[in-house]
Image 1 (cartoon, one colour):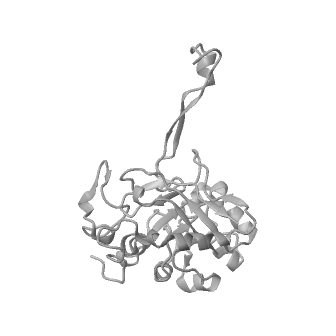
Image 2 (image 1 turned 180 degrees about the vertical axis):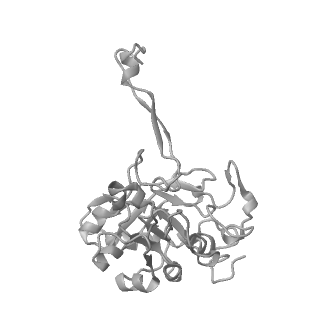
Length: 294
């Protein structure tokens, strides 16, 4: 049972969307004013084998069910000279690809966000708070470029971003998307072993600071929003775990493993943030291709 201030019951006893309810038509229209040049940047990492991921997590699997070599080997064309290629793609979102966590992804005790029974999460999916409940996200995005603010290429692995530091960088308000850059994905190409040596991320104070400001979504370029130790685990207690503070207690969806280098290079701190998770029935997450419209 949650004990700190939370959003349980705030949007009604049956709510499964959390602070995404704050994205009213009025707020969406206001957010569109953040677009000035019309430039569109992709904020996702490529879905591929060999990309940044947590140690021990399965890589995305991408195969062709039929390809050019099949026709070269004698496969009959579909029609008169017509040939084709089909993809077979298997993606494990958590820890391997840019994705949005559903509110059923993590909980404490016997209840999901808003008091929904955790027994409703089955081996074939979640009957409460699945990712299909999220819908599309169109909001004002606010970039907290922490390394740039501190004059660093990327944060060191043991660095934890406090609420006070976020407050130094930028204001953020209700129904907005807080986008946190640590620069940690840059480490992967230099050394996967260094990437796995730990990860910088938000401190519990930053999670509570963002929750107090009623953000709709928290997104980051690291793998877990909070920091990780070399065992790929959080050092925080359950009371201070970032997923429990944000997902479980406040109903704030999380987006992880963003690519923010091009956005950082523009120097822009606000933009239109657009994302549409797949309607994966009962899913604990969805692969995502977020966009920043400048």
